[in-house]
Image: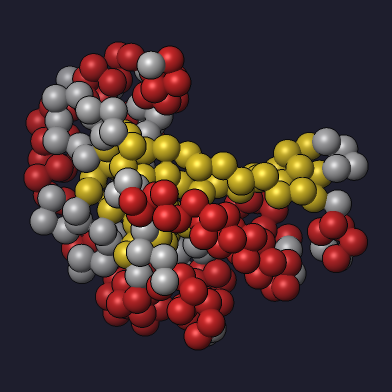
Length: 230
């Protein structure tokens, strides 16, 4: 993609909320999408960034940092974490830049969010990039249980916050044995993170099924709709 192509896209950034079971906002995810002005088509960040040049990806990251800085004092004052999604390339970019590391470390509310598809995620603390990131920043795992990698990084205590993969949660809730399965999963992970988040809570039935479990927070269309109506 050329610079001219890049100029055809307008970046739109939103904060996707994560709520505690009592309704308190505990974190927001910074999610960006791109509007292609020629055809008026919106493209998610994870699809379009793969087509960007290194300079274009850096420009996108810088825009996201500016947005986080704009709201950071409010978020920190209200004990709300802000999650910035990273892939392997952006992680290497941050680790190789003293300027970016200092800038991001100056934002105490910031957490860097990684997925199980992160390069060599299965190595856990033996992965030098994961080890370096965890030394400098609070980390969130986006999709625990997605099946993309073993859980060594989780048991190596690299993550402050772990989000249960939405597909796994929805599969578990279809089983008659889901209460014992969820209880065992929560107990298993409680020693390896500060907060365990349930993702994919997209119906009232699902919300009722998991409301008695010790999740730290919820993500899902059902919960968001309820909050907007309150």
